[in-house]
Figure 1 (cartoon, rainbow, N blue to C red):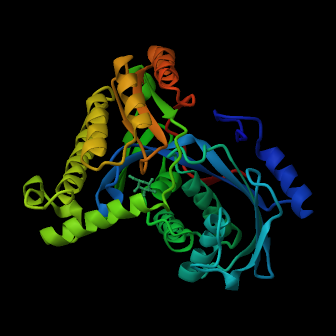
Figure 2 (cartoon, rainbow, N blue to C red):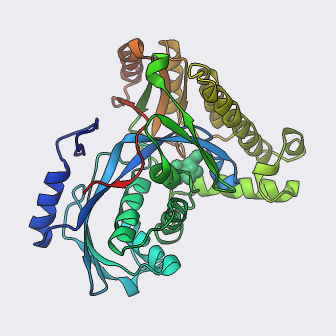
Figure 3 (tube, rainbow, N blue to C red):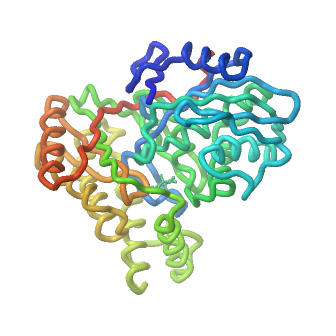
Length: 392
Ligand code: GLA
């Protein structure tokens, strides 16, 4: 998978903006109007709280999707990806909508549809995508792709759509065209993340606060360990958890679990009680984490990460052995805390590690996987990066 560097630190292989522009010209026989970038995200804390109208604290990471785009005035959208074989997928804008597109192209074409439907941005375009956000790692490769395409289409149409509205348009594409009932955290992180900050987001009001997140000053690093165990959000489990949360809120008599308390979940029957308890305690952990970061206590996040993992494993039941072993081994080898990130059932673990211990923690997790005969995990360090923007 290509690394997408334009002079800033990036991770991964060799592709860059020039290469993507050249590939665009070879494919479509014209130069792109511009190139847009949008990052993946890792959630520091606040998992499975976004669709409960709760609080989250993600960062945009230094891995991203690029979209080279040129406007068309005939109402057609053509889209191709350097990560996918085959010819561009070609559709008329007027032909797009829920149930009309399948496979990976549903993400970019879904965004084209939702911008037209909600914002009157009916923008035909030729699009070529490149990305170094690992697929299926729980790092929001899909939101990165959506945000890059959404920002590009709005820009070439000459429309300045507020970032939160753009995030909602991208989420709608994922919910209604792709068919994954996800919350809005990933798209907000990709569009609103800032280098050196974590994004404190209230998923009910969409209010945000950039919270300083200075890992260097604390001598710490964020180590992502991609377990390479696969997950698919469109699969039933994510939707089941979401439905359980909505049912729990109904039984308690509140609009969303955001409004529940530890006391109010006590009367629920199992497993709803544990599902709801995770959401209530996790929102509390987000508030705690924000208080720590506001006073510069990055190391203090460690125990919160580990507690979040236990709650996701035992109460929300979205972990798998590969995630549990990576998180526990990281802590045994010196991480201050570690937890699974994203929807669960695969994907990555995030560990907060003293900068000098990254290699030791990595080696310990690799050894633990080898001992169990599991495929090697893919560890890499991430930093809080800038959100989506036009590069040229
Ligand atoms: C996925 C979804 C998000 C969020 C997380 C769990 O990443 O896309 O909206 O629900 O799972 O926190």
